Image (cartoon, rainbow, N blue to C red):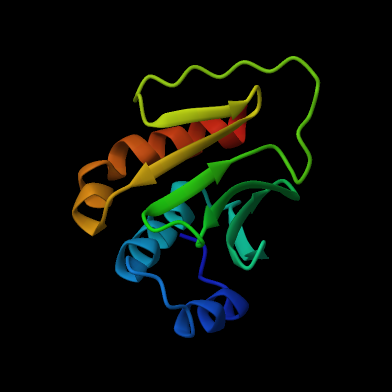
Length: 124
């Protein structure tokens, strides 16, 4: 597992999110998916990088726990297909999707499915 980032730790220490416990839990889950995943702060939230590209970023402005799956900062126009066998993803464009959890219990219940999604997403 990659270790957490001090910058992200500091951000989260001061964060006032109703489901901060779920965010912290999911940070650990995502970092454990692949040793090549690192995290930093992007869009004032924890963001996970693989191969030098931001791939998954929390949306801390949401009332629930939201993760944005993307292929970098800008929407890309190239052909991209990704099969979500979990039903967790809600597509916002051809290469961006949001996964939302109600709370820590929901995040824990879907932890394995999320791990698989992250693993396949960074490989796509």
